[in-house]
Image (cartoon, rainbow, N blue to C red; front, side):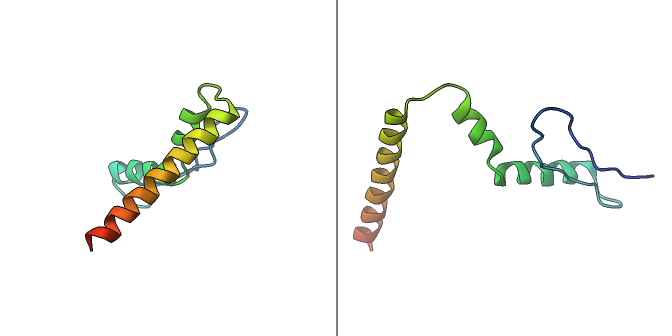
Length: 80
């Protein structure tokens, strides 16, 4: 059985490819593919680009995320 690389057709391919290994179960191949997709953060970018967001809104969200992380770190250090 010959294994070939699957290259998606279209304007902008995702560049995430997985070639099944010899004797590998299909579920394992799918799991490796999903892991690569998650690591490349394709889905997160898709969700971000779904609707237009003003630059000021992006900055506000980024600032709130940063404050949340800093607050959690401070709470963690106080607990120790």
